[in-house]
Amino acid sequence: MTKARDRQRLVMGASVIVAIAMLVGKSAAWVVTGSSAILSDALESVVHLFATGFAAFSLWYADRPPDDEHPYGHGKIAYFSSGFEGGLIMIAAFLIIVSATVSLVSGPELARLDIGMLVTTVVLVVNGTLGFSLVRVGKRHDNVVLIANGHHVLTDMWTSAGVLVGVALVYLTDITWIDPVAAILVALNILRTASGLIMRGVRGLMDEADPGITSQIEAVLDRAVAEGEMLGHHKVRYRRVGSAYWVDYHIQFPDALSIVDAHERAHRVEDRVKAHFGDRQVIVTAHLEPEESIR
Image (tube, rainbow, N blue to C red):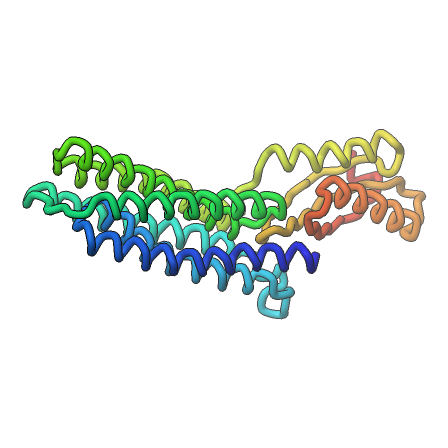
């Protein structure tokens, strides 16, 4: 667990450092070129820096153990972080559309597009490498904060890719209106990603259950029934708090079985449920019932 936590903090720290470097590089490229498309990329990076800072805080806060005020732990902040990032990305997209529209109406004035293309290419490669690393580590450790931040970084990468195409077309054709149009198209793609992050956060905060996971838990309990560990089960539920799963269910035992034996069997069933989730943190609460409750 310590190694996993260190790995997650390492990639998040790298994300913060890269976000600062990308903002500086893109801003410099915009000043040199005057490109609306590059400005759109820089505006997205401003938002990305704030979002990454909040994601880093969320990663630290989510690791705090449960306390009297938060008996289920602090992992829910991961979903708030996802929605927060999505909201900031959406704001950036609207700012890009406004800026590009003004440029399209007034007529863009561009210069030194070769430098802009060079900076944008470097940004694209760096963000692509970091974004895929964040998503990979986040999925490996089932960490919503890292996954959301990774998708945000990949959004930044695709933004840079769209900007690169637009600036390259202007460079090759001298048709300047392509630049703000490219910025608007990039903004529309950012809006799509932002909506996905917001919905991920809303689903998590609302404890939306995945029917697939519920079925998997029920299958484990069904096997325990088939093997004689207990007589039946019902009221199977789970909630996700960050990377932890809180599972609860009711299980039935023969009336003649002692409470000691029933408790031991319940623990064996609990171990089966935890084993099904592998390395993920699972907290199980079982309510023991007598055989007559089945009738």
